[in-house]
Length: 209
Image 1 (cartoon, rainbow, N blue to C red):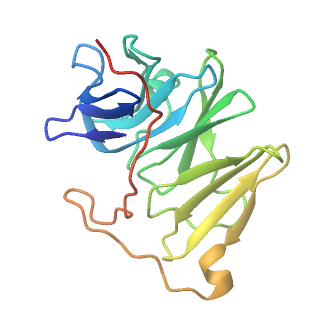
Image 2: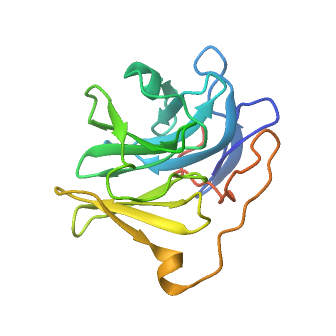
Image 3: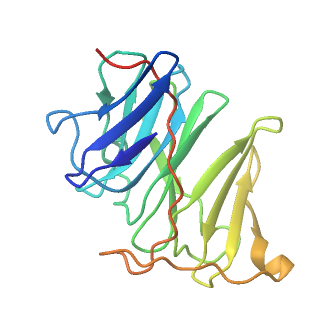
């Protein structure tokens, strides 16, 4: 499990057979201070990846394997993607890494890259009459159909899904379709309309050192 401490460092808690502990993933010489809540997934090469929103308003991943050192990339900055206005989420599907975040104008931006190749970016909103985002997106893959699905809270208070594989993007108003209550807004300092945050897990690894 990875979380942000009061000084903006990402801290990992790990528990493997015969060992448990905690430690900061990277110093300021490796990565900028984190703001918001990190999220984690397993990279295409099996490494653990922790995504976070930096105090420079760019999206950064930290990656590591076993007891090895932590690597860092400024992914959104490297491809001149828009600055973030919310926390990122990501996953790997068919060898391609997908990362999603909300921008200041309410669009959901995607970063994607295969393996170690260069990062590409683009909006996934604005194509099928879906509302702009008011909360942070959460994405997940459907591996059996190679489908990408991204969930988010719209400015209308409903929970929406965007989905695509090789064709055009589809959209569903999930909460509106079934008449469920509107999504709650969690008030956070500096982010008056932030979405509720979920617990963030990253893959377990062996204790360093």
